[in-house]
Length: 67
Image (cartoon, rainbow, N blue to C red; front, side, top):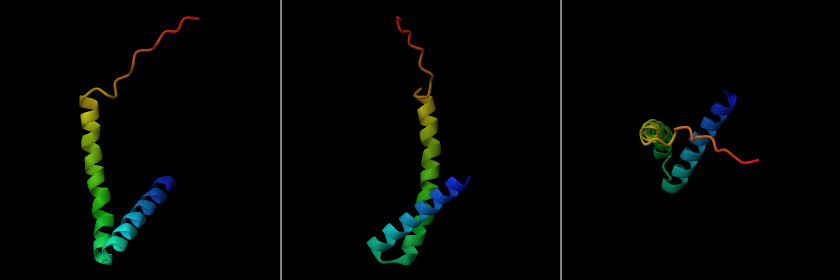
């Protein structure tokens, strides 16, 4: 859980700093730092549904090797 929290903190900080440096506006930097991870979370949910629907997560048959 600590690793998840530190990664999330790093992600928010990077999103804020990049946006702030590009726009010069701290308010927009803060908004992007909050909105971008939320949008990515929703996109990830639909990505997983599509991945499952198209069968990319099906187990592959075991390969037999001659000895």
